[in-house]
Image 1 (cartoon, rainbow, N blue to C red):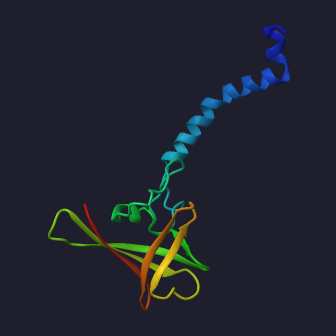
Image 2: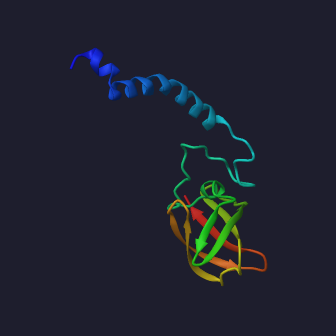
Image 3: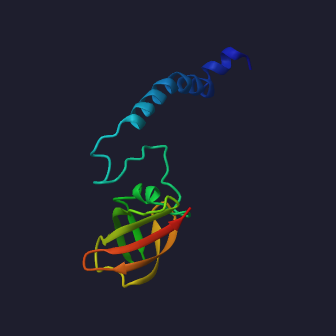
Length: 144
């Protein structure tokens, strides 16, 4: 098969069309990834774009949890929404104290105790939640 036959056959034509359309598709995808309309993000949630991932919660920090504000976590059959992260002032620069606040999306809050939470990304973490009147809170005191 010579080059001319290949280019005008079905496979060659498909490759040529894809090569010509690729710059336009790449440009449209880049523009879409840069756009951050408020309507695309959940209220209070940090918009992560199409190519970014949520941070790993294996080593928890206030900054990592803040990326999940507005996101749902499954706690057994109860979906919990992460509503806020509150940082506590410390006198030592090597410590970090913060609280993570959840509210029940539907149903009752889980009882005080150790619970396994799972995010839609597949990440699982075990937290000791303190059930309050309106929220379930997890408290952290970390040393660097």
